[in-house]
Amino acid sequence: MLNRISRATIATLLVLLVAAMGLPGPAAASSRVPLVAIIVGPAGEVTTRYRALADEAAAAARAEGAQVVTVYSPDATWPAVRRAVEGASIIVYLGHGNGWPSPYRDALYPRTQNGFGLNPVAGVDDSAHQYFGEASIEKLRFASNAVVIFSHLCYAAGNSEPGLPEGTPEVAVQRADNYAAGFLRAGARAVVAESHLGPAYYVSAVLRGRGSIESIWAAAPSANGHTFSVASARTAGYAVRLDPHRAASGFERALVSRGVTADQVRAGAVGIPGAWGQAPAPSLASAGVKFSEPAFASLPIAGTTSRLTLPFVGKAAAVLTGTEVSVRWDTILLDPAPARPSQPTPSVGPGVSTAPGASTAPSPAITPVPAAPEVDLVVPEQIGSVVEPARAGRTASGLRLDVRYPVAPGLYRLSAMLHTPEGVAYDAATQALLTPVIVRVGGPIAAAYGAPATLTLQADSLTGVPVRVVNAGSRRWDLVETAPVSLVAGEAFVPSRTTVVPARLVATWVSADGLPVPDPISVVLDPSVAAPGGASEALLTLVAPAGAGEYLVLLDVVSPANGPLSAVGSAPAIIRVSVGEAPSPAPSPSPSPVTILPQPHR
Image 1 (cartoon, rainbow, N blue to C red):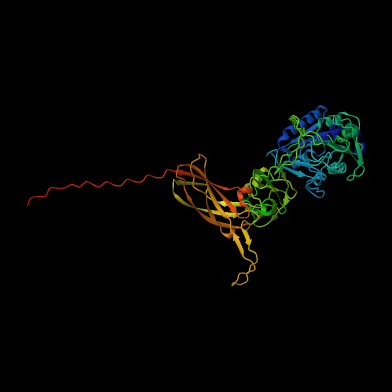
Image 2 (image 1 turned 30 degrees about the vertical axis):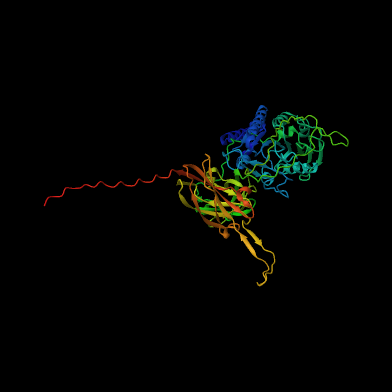
């Protein structure tokens, strides 16, 4: 019976079946348009400018009839970006770049290098970013003949970071080649990188043009005319092209490609996908797990490593084995570095001739006009901005991992973040289960104090104040003196004599109003406090000032080996003291009057 059904009947039945199922019919195949995915990662204060450049590219794509999906910080998470770029013909990215060679690692690290810098958690801010490197990028799937456009990244165009040496042409080629590799494995045929040009030019040229990507790149407004090309070492059959600002320096433009044309990019379009929405982030918020305050196994000393524990409270089983943790150190206050001696002023300056026989009389001084600072939208990394998860050990009591304290002493806000074993951050509700803490990171010579924050005293009163002192650095405070070898007549031979000079705790009164204050007092600290991690309790006997008012008492350790620790960057403790008037002496009681009663007559 099937043989008797005409082809027209079969076609009609197929159309009806497709319509009933809600699938795109034959007409949809002829109306395929390229999908353009535009991503803006968090980049601090320049993120607003990046969003404006991205909007220009989005407008250019819509003007050419393309479908546009935008994923902007603070909502540019890995799940959202991964969903947005699926089947995209043009992928645009503006944000932080992390490539190689770089000063941060000795070898290529695919986990974080040569990819996107994205928001760890949606909706938080434009500062913290987590890198998803080529190991993640190569698992994506773009449309056939896709083009990737990088704008304002570090490393992608062969460049370095502002303030760092840019390197040789060979290093620049490596950076551009490495940055493109993962995207080419994901299906791209060309990767364009521009340090300063916005992406709108390339979006319009690819969607409207007819030439090759090489000709579009060569005709860009940013072209310098110094193009050279080498074979790719990372991707067989591809060429790496650089066009530096000067013949062999100023790397700001790159192209890694293999002859794709604009027509081929458009022909590779996969059609209009279904409605796009934000991909859900993983969550532990309803699993019943909670955490108490983070704890360190050792003192916070700059540049050292310590074991960090995130203690469980509640259902620890909800936390998967292999869970990753990242830590972020946000600077609150950096301790000032000790002042360096000023350098002598050179005796020879502008207008002074040093030629033999020439006059040494100075010519009139000319004040140079300062040059206007450069505007560079390729921004370097900032302290605390990079979120890099690492696998944590899971115990019955909590999650543990080794962390490194910041190299600069100061006050920091430590925020830990939970990630899945794949490195994807859990949602904001899960991160809210963790408690940020304030950490004072000390230098090699540092003291920490346990003292009352405020005191209320009466003028001229005598008060004992207990203070706990901890050696929070990595060096000793005391001074060990060894006497030379001596032989004293009539005494036994003594090869050497060792004397230990201990540290002292000094309390200094300060009045903001210039009122007279008592002299500083000091107490000798127990020798046990001299070693790193040592602690001692001391009792300060404070004599309050004679005048009522508001005062400060500064507590500082004076080390015989290093002098006052506050002079080498260790902040003193401060006690705020309110001094009230001394009570007036009570007046002496007056004698009671004596009443003499008349005596009765006998």
